[in-house]
Image 1 (cartoon, rainbow, N blue to C red):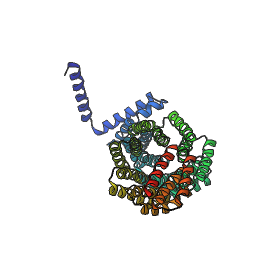
Image 2 (image 1 turned 180 degrees about the horizontal axis):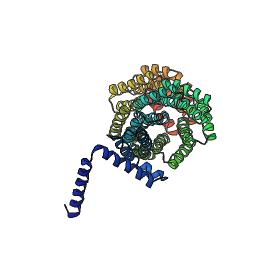
Image 3 (image 1 turned 30 degrees about the vertical axis):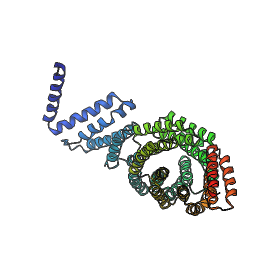
Image 4 (image 1 turned 60 degrees about the vertical axis):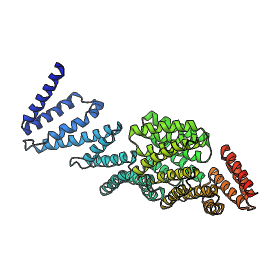
Length: 494
């Protein structure tokens, strides 16, 4: 240790010893003086005060400790300052993605005796949002439920509606969309009664997302545009960006790839302009899915890697899992089966930890399909069946039907065309009602192959219909894949 370092070390020891030797009441006075001096020095400099908020919380708290005074007004003032700086510290740490620190300060503020109703509501909602944004939706729901109760008891309609909307979103992230819809409908009723157009637009956008698996695509697209019109009217950039991203996902599923990319680009530009890194990662993840659908596998993998990097930076476990899934899909499409399996495993771990039951089922289906392709048919079928059961438990008929299709394809590859036919006939009515040419085309294509293997004369018509649907869906690679499967089935039947 050099002389300068030794001096500084001794100085620190002496300083700490001197502090510890002070009577508690004198220490409280020193903390109060420090708080007063800092506030005077940085009066009007909000950025500096926000950056020091955590330290000022400490000084305000310590200034009340063992204080030798009967001046209740002073103690009340110090308690108020502590609550004030807890609020600042919560937001400062949250904006810096120091999520655990943000939760710590928010938790203290929510239970602080000097906190106003506005402070408490802000804390309850922010802690819940932090949990939700870091993939801990179930934990977040507890805070939103508490916020809803406090808001309703105190006649705070705006916060009550906001909390109900958030509860609905936590269901969509975990158990699935249907259980969340009643909460969104209640929130929408409150927003309309209070004339909160911004919140109404956000709730309409969320409802459209939650109904995407139960309503025809064109109907959902209309609902999105209704929400978008309101959010544009009230100049809510974040709401517009979120809705554009959802529109991008729907347009991708409809095979309208250029329009999908334009929607994602607009959403991404807004999030980047506002520094919304959590949502930026989500949109980039959606772009990965689009690139995969377009056959741009390298771009899909790169986008997923970028989304994963940002999600790790922000601590968003949910988006980490989804990004790993997209990377697994890219690897599977490239024939890198071992790498895909590793990525699916990592993705499953992340989404299970974050409580994302929908995504757990999605990944199980893809992983099971991969295993079956590698010859592990029984294990693969079991995984896809488990995914189907999870979708059924979530009340998601569309995803249940697509899982039935995935099981049917495995049966087809294993030579069990009769079982495949039965599953596809069960799935087809639901898939047709989705109004998505891509999904109906893929399902009818598999049905045509099953019928051909079984020698059913309806096979040819089904094949032609499937081909037409996939062509209309702007999916030439899937048309080629169907043609190969059809030729193989034709040869097997002959």
